[in-house]
Image (cartoon, rainbow, N blue to C red; front, side, top):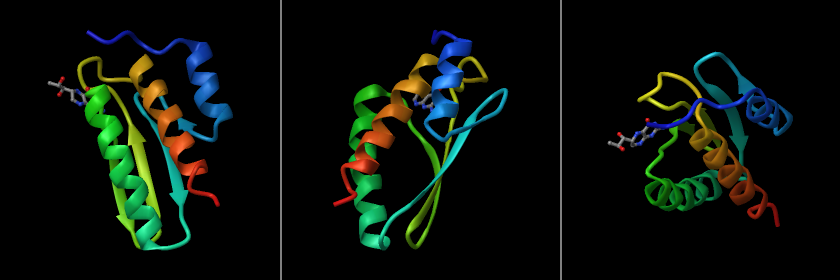
Length: 96
Ligand SMILES: C[C@H](O)[C@H](O)[C@H]1CNC2=NC(N)=NC(=O)C2=N1
């Protein structure tokens, strides 16, 4: 069973630009074009498989809306914070 995210963890998500709600966190990523968006999603897919924790997302052209939540606790867990950190790191490594 995952552990519920602490208040400090919630603050960390908010500071990183995530919109934090009671049961989930959301962020919109915007890339240069569809290929960059989809490339990022492909990298994220491999990380998500490794973590066994997967984003809920919606892609239109160069925009990806992401929601993070942990089903087995019906809310945010430490796994969501770990995944968020990976998503942000992969998105900033796409900058150049
Ligand atoms: C059985 C398997 O461990 C679970 O379904 C995993 C897979 N990926 C998951 N991803 C997310 N975001 N939340 C989960 O609770 C979750 N659970």
